[in-house]
Image 1 (cartoon, rainbow, N blue to C red):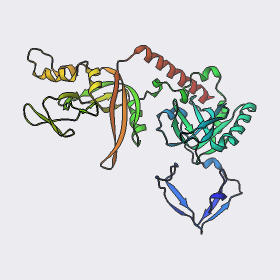
Image 2: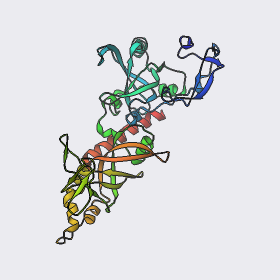
Image 3: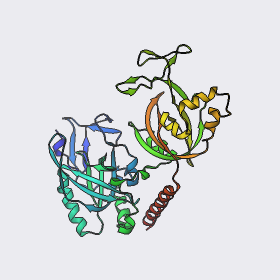
Length: 386
């Protein structure tokens, strides 16, 4: 009823509407409330000058896009670096759609690809192309765009996306006063569409803050020391039988001295394979995090197989014990790849971290990474103070 009367970028006065909590199942916008209009509602265009300084955009810095989960909606703003030519994309269902890529960077000096889909590639895309060719600085603000992944994180426009060129907001003035980044300094930026895995490195505090409310599994990398490994139960008896060509690995319950039972296979197992189940606390300079490591990771970390470590408990001919071997890696630093999920426990979000890979520190690579980060931060500081 009112849909065709509404234009993006135009202000309206609304009366006789119903305001309520937003239904997040259908409303994916960054608002906790929504207004529902019916046949009795009045929608009137506001021709008076409205102060747009009170805009509700919450712009996400481009250097944080890499930590965002796919399909969430974000607001971004940046200076247009390049405007690509339109290209025809064939979808899986056989239909075709046109896409145009616009590269933008912000005060963090990072760059991200904004994919203009559908009608926006022609209208907004052509305007951006002409303005970018003739003007010194063009600022593009994108509201309610969807985070995607194609050889790295990208921003995709949707039917709910609002696009503004050189909007009258403080962020625009900040970016214009900074000006374009020279090409020789732009190479210090991390292009979000071409992210190297080293740039997914996070601190433990960042992991806790940015993943505590996520609804899907994310993967990241940290450099941390092993603070604690629980030694009372470092492994479990696993079923060695095959299911669809793969090892069952289900935990077996010992029924007597010689036979165990697998509830998954519903059969008795004469001899189990032992698998690592390490509960360990990781620590870096920002905080601590409890994580779980399974068999392959445990073997790489402790440099001994689960069965050999387990049998040391009964070997009276050596002074080596599981406790001494585990203590040998404490306070040692490694690079850990973590799989992070969040579930609800007692109505509160609970973070669960699983170590999927552990590697020794390559100090030459670490120095290269730190120097690149220092250079990027220095560049951002220079432009933020100008």
